[in-house]
Length: 614
Image 1 (spheres, one colour):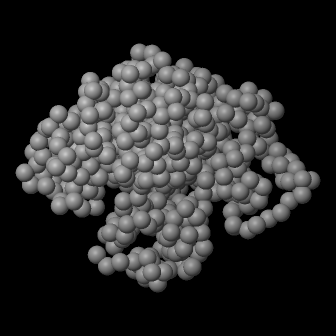
Image 2: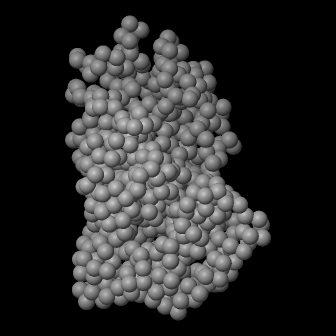
Image 3: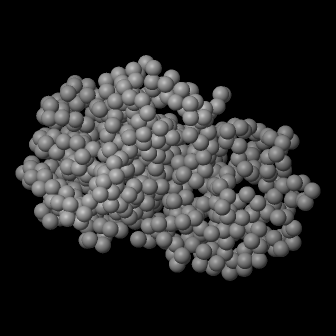
């Protein structure tokens, strides 16, 4: 794979009804209903809204045989109205349901974590090699008849691995690791190949974006080693709602799309399903602009490992680089003075003149080098044409604005002499991810340890546009370990508060700096056992001031307990109108009436010493 130049991975084509994916086809967009699959009219109406918004596939949960059989009526209802959208059945726990669904849906999603293996219980099991092989034979014997049904009915399948529902068997041998997630998928893919069944799409998801990106990268590498070219479905599970859900999804999905990976995507928001479609469309269209971009002559650094990247080694300059958290630099050259105390930038670039009313007494300012003085208690910024000033300047911290195309031998020599210089990497390239990467790899190859702040420049008037584009442009750089800070400049009409919150949101979504409560909430489906959106609003109202906590809000048990392992506290649907509460992956109270559950969650947080009054 070319780290610096965008091109889509070549994959096999999979026929999903009349809307094939993979191969030469454009990236497909999909969503999932959250109505009961036994309610034909509700499912048809919601599927229509998804299609009208631009969705190309509609997925429905099929808990049992009745739901699977009702796909026929839902399909008929849609076709009568002129909607030819392919339907995807979502199956967990019961392979018999998959057999039925394959007769009525254009694609069936199965979960390797619970297709034959028992539901995850977090028990530590032990298998001999013979016992483990016997379990694999059970999968083979149950899976092959399903593949035969799919062949007869021309039904595609999705092998959908979720971090939250890995089986105890996989965990016993591989642990809770990307390698375990990949092997869970490969066990089924190898059977597909052996049986000559190639109508397969793969997804491998997590709510943790770092795990999601690393696992998909690893999966593609393993498939290539085994000569497989199956297309990929991308998504971040339990991404949440609002700006958090948009940033987290664009960061994780965008990082993979930027590397040419992905043939269909779903942006999973805890909102109405049709609202996911415009977000996904904006993300896909933005990445597609990179097609046939001007060539970037980058060279990969020998020390960089794409499948298991670590943070680039840098020299700490004050609070930038080294082991320090990535910083946020913001812009205030328009004279406007506003700051949200929760999202206060580490540095403010003021250009040639400091604000007359500093936003906070201890605000750190950056000014242009030719107006900088030692007494001003600011830090100088140099553009790439001011190298001569760097040697003369006695500041302990300096910022050098530098595009990759200007990274000459003279500049490299200057950086070698001045480890106190922080490089602000600039790019106006169609593929700015590739150009930022090229600069970082050049510094690594030359043994330079100057920190790098990623500068991203936009002109957006809608917050959603900024969130999607900036997260998509920055995600891969964070996951590659190349980001010691970010600097978002937006010359549209958005407020500084929105821009600053987006910058901090990107760092939090990338798991490199926490500035607020993180909510791991599913988008809801026909399995959801309570009003998800109103519950999220109530939980947020009571806990959003608790910086650093992760709270999971999950509609059912499919991924609920598994994702609780990555959350400090969990709120999971246990039955109609009943909630179970978790402390990490341990259930601490079961079957609480829904009306009391949010208050009980707050009591649990308080009892563990993690609650502070507003």
